[in-house]
Every structure is written in structure tokens, then in C-alpha cells.
Amino acid sequence: MLEVTGLHAGYGAIPVLHGVSLAIAQGESVGILGHNGMGKTTLLRTLIGALRTTAGTVRFGGADITRDAPHARARLGMAYVPQGREIFPTLSAMDNLRMGLVKTGERSMATIEALLEDFPRLKPLLERPGGSLSGGEQQLLALARALAGKPTLLLLDEPTEGIQPSIIEEIAETLAALRDRMKLTIVLVEQNLEFIAAVSQRVLVIKRGQIGDEIPREHLGDFEIMSQYTGVHG
Ligand SMILES: Nc1ncnc2c1ncn2[C@@H]1O[C@H](COP(=O)(O)OP(=O)(O)OP(=O)(O)O)[C@@H](O)[C@H]1O
Image (cartoon, rainbow, N blue to C red; front, side, top):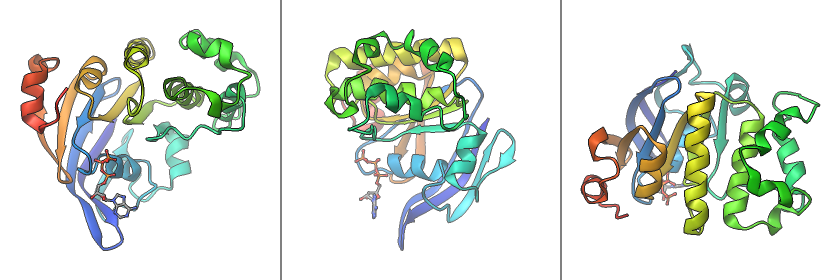
């Protein structure tokens, strides 16, 4: 479904990605593990088209989208939950969710009502301003808002950053359930070993702007071994 070949990108004259190649099948959930500054956010921003690809190709659902603008990629089914979540702080949680419908133009609330069954923690919070929710609640809201647009590929940038452990576990369970039920394809960049192991079927390691090792499936969840691949500790 997503095929990236020899991807280069950066900021002005500063190169950050030096030939990233990866292939992700429909319905697969792939984690990309890496330290701060290794290019995780840059990779996701290049995949959604917010940063220009300077060399290489991105194919999505068989089409070459390397030069497509972000809105065109969104229309094809890509959704992105950025680091920091970008909830509209003064809009209510419900209005934040409604913003997620803009992509499909849906007017009825059926999608949101169905989604809330997967996000029960949001139900009593819907009238509150988005900015008054805790970090974990905002992350759940950002996920639900992204899913309201009915994406086929969900790109997540460090969803556990700054979030208390009890909600991290809930977010992992919610994502794993959605992945299994909706056959969502997920690309998750993270440095939280436990979370990435709970959500991903495969984990790739990014180092200095390139994909290095793939951690063998049998080692997912063995945090000592995982940390040897990256130097990231659980
Ligand atoms: N807007 C920018 N202008 C110039 N350099 C940038 C910019 N954003 C990021 N960088 C640099 O690009 C490199 C990769 O950053 P990136 O944010 O992709 O890393 P990351 O792996 O996501 O790390 P983090 O977890 O800290 O966000 C870093 O050296 C960073 O300083």
C-alpha cells in the first residue's frame, strides 16, 4: 500500500533523510523506532507532503504521489496525527471531532457517534474546550478526529510524548483494537518501546536519516534486545 524508495528530504540546504526505503502492506501496523533527532518527524512530514521530497519516490495505493500536495494525499486516504497533537484549544472536543468530518464532507453525526464507542473516555468531555483536556485525552481526541475522516493509512508521531502511563496503555489498546477491526494501516514513530511493541506488527529502526535494522518479530517485547538495536531504553 505504501512504498517508499530512496527518499531524501531536509530543511533548506540541511539534508535529514538520506535514502529511506520501506514497504508497508495494507492492514499492516509498522513502528519506526529511533532516538530524538534521527529524522522520525521529518520522515512523516515528507510522507504527508508537508516537506518536499528532494530525491526518491513515494507510492501510495499503486500511484506515484511524490509530488502531490498534502490535501491531495489526505483525499487519497492518508491521515496524520502530529507530535503535540494540534487540538484546537478553544473549540469544544465535539467541534474538534466535527473538524475531522471536513475531509469527507459528511454532515451526519453517525461516524462520530460510532467512533465514540471506541473512545468512551471522550464521551463525558465533549462539551469541554479541547485545550482543557489532559495530554492523554487530547491524544485520544486527535486520534478520533483523524479517524473521522475515514483514512486508510494513519501516520502517528510519538503519541505517548508527555502522557501519563495509564492513558498510554489505553491508547495502545484502542489502536490495536482499531487496527484489527478496521484493517487500518498504521505507521507509528516512537521511542517508547513498550508502546511500539504493543501496537506494531513490525518494527524498523531509523538512524541518522536511514532505515537500519528491522527488529525480528520474536524480539518485539524483549526490551533489552530492542534497546540494543537503538540505544533507546524502555
Ligand atoms: N524546521 C527545521 N529546520 C532545520 N532543521 C530541522 C528542522 N526540524 C528538524 N530539523 C533537524 O532535522 C533533524 C531530524 O529532526 P526530526 O524532528 O525529524 O527528528 P525526530 O527523530 O523526529 O526527533 P524528535 O523525536 O526530537 O522529534 C534534527 O537534526 C533536527 O534538528
